[in-house]
Structure formats: structure tokens, C-alpha cells
Image 1: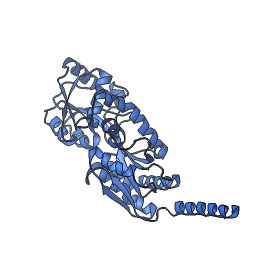
Image 2: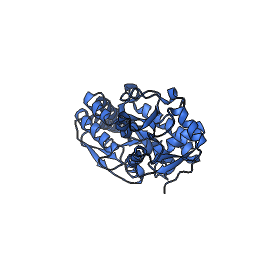
Image 3: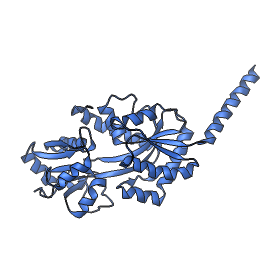
Image 4: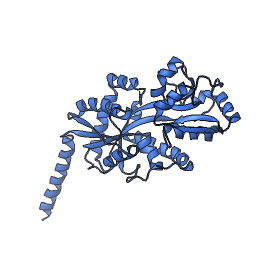
Length: 322
């Protein structure tokens, strides 16, 4: 009997090892929790195309939309943890949604991080006619016009809105938030002078910044933007620590074997090291993270730090899904 038990144990261990070694043996699906053609979708397709060569299997994109990305990420959280269904998310899906929505999954415990992909730095901009010449001047001007400084957002709980809340908390300024259906329409009203200021992704704003169509006060980051090196950081402009950047990462369901996570991570790292991939992401206004930040542990640590930073701000403002 002992001999039979030992034989079965060895057989099961051998089968498990063979399964890990043979991964992947069929196509892998990346769930994109937003519509086709958007920034997250395009980013996923750029990475998936290159990952296919490393993994030796097709990497298929499936768009699952709804509830600010939580419908698609719910699919990932409840998928079989075998590495064949993974998801791409960002600050909204893996930070803000946890404070705004009653999710059917836990953001920190129901996913296994795979890798950071790329990040996008943000600007604080203003209409061309804004009298303030720099960030300190803008803060002073807003304090002399309390509640009258209009700030465009992409809606309650959007990065534009939450970053504006942080700005208020750190500077004592008072803003009047104006919601739009997206960052693009709000940007158009800054250009037209209908609203005063905006915290906005460099992906959207950079062409107008370069053309001089808006006042650009600072990059909301520790480092300057490579594509616009003349714009100071918030630290240099006088509001140290006013940081926000959007980023994309890949996650698998919890319980996915570490050997599978490692293979997926290696494929992402290989893709991001490809100059063509980096160039295509740069064309979208995204910067690839340094190699040391492309580990599962780095993604998990970033998400945890972002939740600890932003959830209190969102909850204090009483932001809830409508």
C-alpha cells in the first residue's frame, strides 16, 4: 500500500511538472475591460503582438466593457487560474474602482500581478488667457478667486477629478469641477477658454502643449517628460509631491502557478525591451518602466501604495458610482 501511495504521489508530481513545463499549449486571452480602439486596447494589442513570439501561442484580445472596467476585471478574477485568461488594467480599474464601486472581487487578493507595462505622465495646464505665469501664481490666483476657478474633468472619480482634489488638499486652492464625457472634450474647452484649468494626460495634451495653445505649468511627476523636457516638475514648480501618473499592468487570477506567472512576465519583459514596441508606446505618450520595475512584486507594491494614497482622498470626497 505504501509503495502504491508513493507511486501515485510521484505520478501526480510528475504530471504537475509536465503541465508547468508545457505552458502555454493553447492560445492565451487578454481581457481588455474597455472598448476597442481606446488607449488600453491599443496598448494591449501592441504588447500581445510581441508576446506571441516569446510564448509560441496566439495572444487574443477580448474586449469586455462595463462599469468603468470592473465587468471585464471581474471576468479575470473569476477565471480558471491556469494562465490562459489574464487581464490588462490601470489606475482606474485597480485603484479608484475599489473606492467607488461595490466590486464582486478584492483588488488586492483576487489577482496575481504579472508586470507593469508602461506609464503616462500628466500635466497641469490652463487656458491661454490665464493671468498666472507659473504654478505658484496659479495657486495664488485661485485663492483670490475661491470657488470660481473651473477645472475640467472626465467625471466623478476620474483621474482628472481626483488629482484636482489632491491639488486642493495640498495647496488650499478652491476649484469648481466641471464634468465632461471624457478628457478630450474637456481639453477642447480649455483651448477655447470656456474652462480655466485641467489636470490631464500628456497623451491628450502634448500636441497642444507643443503648439503653445495652452499654458503648461508642470509635470505631475518626480521627473520631466522626455518628450517635453522644458516643462518643470511639480517639485521644481513649487508643489513637491503633487504626483499623478496613469499606468497599465497585467494581472492573472489569484492561484495562478508562479511558474506560469514567470513565463508571462518574461514574455512581457521581452516585449518591452523591443525598440519597436517602445517606440509604438511612446507614440501613444507612454514611457516603458525601467527593467527593475517590470516584476510582479513591483506591480503589486505600486498598486498597494496607490490604493493607500488615493482611497482616503476619494472616500473623503464621498465619490460613489451613480
